[in-house]
Length: 181
Image (tube, rainbow, N blue to C red; front, side, top):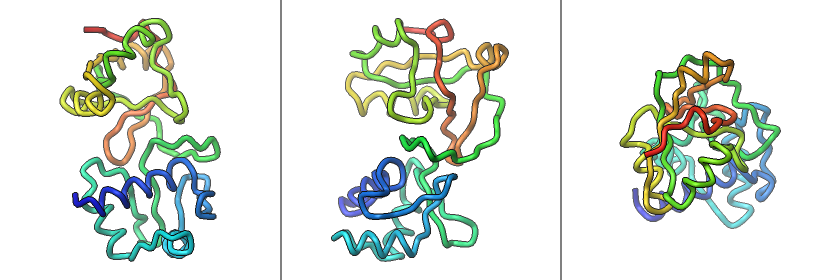
């Protein structure tokens, strides 16, 4: 992605996941925003985005962070929201027996004690494959990949969801379900 596409993607992430009020944008309870309003409000706050550029960002985002509605009128982030009022209304799903979580080595001891917590987000993010977890961990420092016994968690009543871009979500992962390297 070019620098301009990356910059726009980061802006969309801020607005659609964390702070729509920064540009006066309204999200519905499932996190959808009207694209016309997004483009108008972005421009009025010094960040003009054309519809073609928006479509290009969505199409070229390697992590498929954003979804455009079937009618082409709305956009939302697929996961990663910190807004309590947003519930992207995913149905519960049966996860693979094992999931992965990429983190930085400096966080491992805290995770041993507290497990994986959602922090400022609405869910803990998990990957279905090791390689994705490594890439996630690298964004935060020296990567460490933890395994999560998702089958055992689900058997004990923990609920999982899978976002449109394949990220597995759950409220928290108690330390007893985590495998450490």
